[in-house]
Length: 208
Image 1 (tube, rainbow, N blue to C red):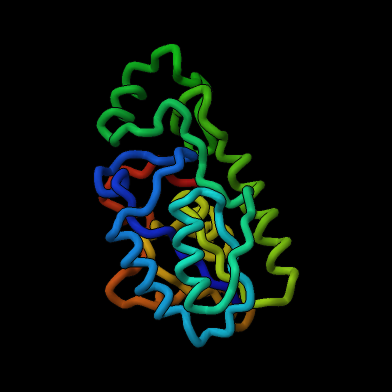
Image 2: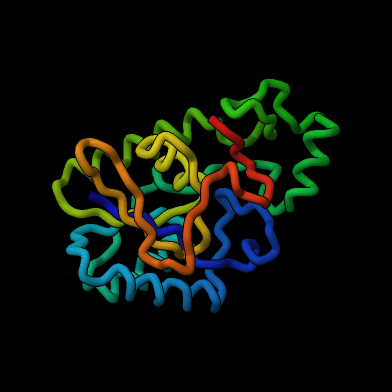
């Protein structure tokens, strides 16, 4: 069993801009969301909190850690995917870059069949580092809470559930096995992850 929490809201989330590896802090709404998530995560015997080093995830983890009397462990492998030139752009601007396929764009599509800037992190690298971090921390035998970002959340749901899900900000979920099959339960019935197929806002990761 383990838990995942995507970071709370930032101003760029609110503006629907791609953040990637750009270090955008939580806004006041994001901090309030983290406090709510901390309340929901109490009483689950979580023994370790592992967080991305980006401030929006780390502050979320620290707020939860304060409630659980745990100090987050920082793991650089949990950082959000680097989108390169796409960072700071909204979805319409990303679409324009893909339509024009200018010199900043990589002519080779990524694993999802989409084109990204030449300076963006490749999806294979993202999946590899997230998997490695999970395997290492899960081997500790402790119940782990991972606090990170949207694209890592999709890679984890793809690995354990066979289908990618998109997480809203600060929506805590529990993963557990039943007869060898992994399941995901949302702790907040008013803040639920959804399948990427049903995601109305255009995904930057696509379907793998």
